[in-house]
Structures are given as structure tokens and as C-alpha cells.
Image (cartoon, rainbow, N blue to C red; front, side):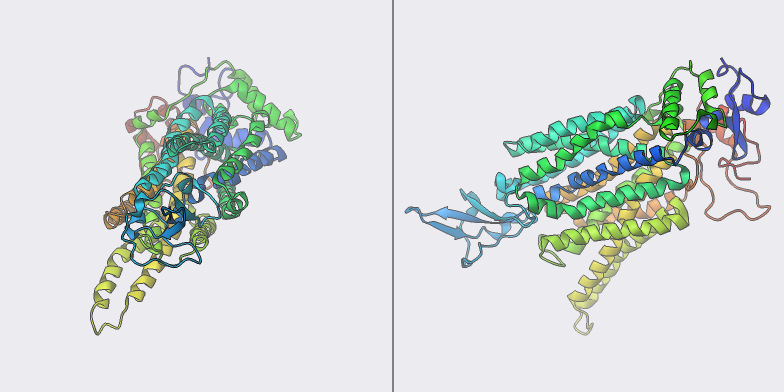
Length: 614
């Protein structure tokens, strides 16, 4: 077999093409086997950018709207309403009594008497032993989970457990389905996740108690994670290098459309069970993806499943109405020669033996964790880290303020990343996050001290305005940090382990989001320390981002050796005649610990860097 004996890159560079060895192409300054050059050779051979590819990309966008509904459903299903006690006297007459103020500090709601009834004086009775509660739900529903099972007073902690369940399900789902997607493929993970989210999601609407609700929400989150991860990977792997970011951002905007439409959907459904069913039922349409959506060709090629790859390329050329004669680089004949090769699948744990790849993934995981974790700190600071709001008492104004900041962040990412690249954009947004955090922690304390002086002329309102301004900037930049970290990781992780790499960074984002219900469960105790820890993490991340490579307009790495040689470039270009300080590939391969690294390294000249720069 041509794959045995000398390394492939050495064979390609030293011998002319023959029936007994793979054909090669020039990639950068070195030669690689034709079948490993997916973006340069395989993708153009079946009509990249053709009608069929655009249809597949559109199919990855459509579910983003329903995913947006599912991700933000907790804001409506588990919103803490205003509540009061309704009691009957001995003669059967009903009276209204305010619950004590301390009864609802663990939730987000407040306590008001029903409209038109006088506010009772005092309120010293122990209304937490009330037999019947009445609620005013602010989120457009007549009944939600809290009012269904009276999750107030001593039972308020169950609301936070229910919020945990979806997030924890997402975390475990990302980790497990990511590894499965690298082993069996993206398409089976997507289809099985759709089937099980229909089962668990619709069963959530039939829950008979909060324990059943929380348990089923865990499995719903697990399946939702499989859908999100597989669609994200398919979207990245379908696109040529120049369109990856734009296509990913369009999916983000569609998901935000679901966030903006969610209040209207809740107002139409009125009941939480109807709302849950309406959110889940559109996933029924994704069952047709089993027929119309193919496996990722890039993943098939990277794992050396050449027989399935050949069939898929012929299907793509037929769908794009292209002739097989347009295969000018000879991809199909090369596939026929290598068709007997055994598939080679890789698990994410293989990344532990690399020298650079594991560091890049860890840095982006920490960035994702920090971005989503500190986002909650800024949100609580803007809204007031206790029950009362700092800006408004209106649920919808609060909800749309958060959504508007996220939308503005994504809009700003497009020109910034287009101009500065992935690494430069991530660095800029992380610096903004660190500045907003440090100024909020340090400057506001200084303003608070001066405002207490009699001749300072400052009031608490000045401090509040500064706090709101820093919080908005922090939420704006931290959202961009989290989103860009996930996208960056998808680009620099090799195709053979892209599912596992995406699972790690998305799970890190889930851990960051998990800090919100944890802080609420502890009644915001330790809030300041929580903010200080994440502020310190932003400073560490700023340094670590400089170690990352730049992936803008670069070909995706297909295997672990490709990802290992995907090392950083300087932020500024080299001056003419200046010697680069990065390791050459001949030096790099001595430390990689990979058996396959020589296959790629030997074809690269000694005076080039790992990214092919002289």
C-alpha cells in the first residue's frame, strides 16, 4: 500500500505522481497529499458555493430560531411572580394578606397585594404557612411552573434547582455528544438528539411535580446540546475559509430573533405547558433531515472513510449539476486508489499528547468560562444585585435591555473581527471587559467614599450612573468574548476532534452561565468575591490570547498534526530581513510526541515557521 513505509509528505516531495503513491499539492510552502487538502482541492471539486451547499447552510440556520426559544424559555417558565396570600376565615369569607418581605428574597419577584385591595398594615403573621397563594406573573403567562406548584417561601430554592437542571444537562450534553460526533459522525448525533428532545421536551409539559420537571429538563438540555453542537460543526465544515464567520454570525442573529420573539410567544400561549409544547413541536420538522441532510464530507475525508466520501462527492456534483469532468484535480480517481484504507477515528483525549493544541483549547475554554461568568456579574450590577431593579421595574424592559446589548455585541463583532481577525478581536473585547470590571470594582468604591464627605458634591445617583455605564460596556464586551471563543475553538481544532473541542469550550460556557443560579441560590452572598475572581481571570486571559494562532482566511486543520502546527503568528508583520522568533517545524516535531507529525513536518523547509511564514 502507498500509505505504508516512508511518510506521506516525504514521498510527495521527493517522487513524481504515480499509481502507487498519492498525488500532492502545494499548500503554503510545503507539499501535502491531495486528499488532505480539503479546502484547496476537495471543496472546489464538487462545486463549493453551489446551490446545494447554500441549501445545506440554510438548513443549519432554520433550527436556530427554535434553539433560541429553548435557551431562553427559563426566563418565562421559571420567572418568580409577585405573590400574596389568600385565606378564608371561619365563615368562608376570603381575605388578602401580604406575605412578609423576607419571604421572597431568594427569588426575582416582589410582593404586592391584588389590585384594588388596600395594603394591610403590619403583616406580622406567618404567611409562609398560607394554604393558598395568588400570583401576578410578569412574563405574559397566566400560569407558570412557580405558580403551578407554589414554589415560594420555603420552596423557592426548587426554582434554582430547576434552572440548574437545564444548564447541567447542556454541560454534560456538550461533553458527551461532542465525543460521539467525532466517533460516529455529526449526522447521527443530530438526528438522535432531535428524536430524544421531542420525547423529553413534550414529557416536560406533562410533569406532575417539580422533581419530574427538573429531571426531564436535564435530559432536554442534554439533547439540545447535541443539536447545537452538531449544527455548529456542520456549519463550520460546510463553508470555505472566507465565509465561515459570516455564516456563523447569521445563525447567531437568527437565534437572537428567537430571544426577541419569545415574549410574544409566551403571551400567545398563556400557559406554561402550552408554551413548552409549542417550543418543542417545531423539532418534528428536523426529522426530515435524516433524508435530506448528508454527513459532513470534511469529517469523512479526515477520518479516511474514502468510500463514503466518493459517494458523497458524486452526490454533490449531481445536485450542483456539475460534470465529473470538472474534477480537474483528480480527487475522485485518488479516492478510488485509497478506497481500501481503513477508517481512522480519533478521540479528544489524544490532544493531551500534543505540545501546542491542548494549550490553545485550554486558553479558549478559560476565555469562554470568563466571558459568560463575568457577564452575570455585570447584569446583576446593572439590575441591582438584590431583588429590586436598578433601572426599571418592568419585566419586558429588563428582558429587552439584555437582548439588545447582546444584539449590539454581535453587530459590533462583525466589523471588528473582519478588520482585526479572530485573535485581535478577541483581545480587544477582553481588554474592554477587564477595564469595565476593574473600573467598576475600584473606581466606584472610590466614588462611594467621596460621596460620603459633606463637601464632595457627589450623590449616590452619580455612583449608580457610573455602575450602569460600566455594566453595559462589560455585558457588551463579555458577550462578544464568549461567542468569539466558541467560534475560534471551532476553527483551530482539527476536524477529527472538532466535536470534542467544541464540546469542551461550550461546556466551559455552560459553567460560566451556571454561576447565575448559584449566586441566586445563595441570595447573592459572595457576589463581590465572585466578581473579583472573574476580573482577575480577564487579566490572565489577555496574556494568554497572545499565544493563540490567527485563523482568519486559513484552511481548517484536518488532523492532529495539522492542528499542532497551527501555531501563532506575530500581531505585527515581520520587517524585511528580520528573523522570526517562532520555532520551525523541524524543532517543533521533536517535542510534539506524535507519530504522525513527521508526515507533515518533513515536507516543510527549515527556514519557515509553522504557519509557512518565512
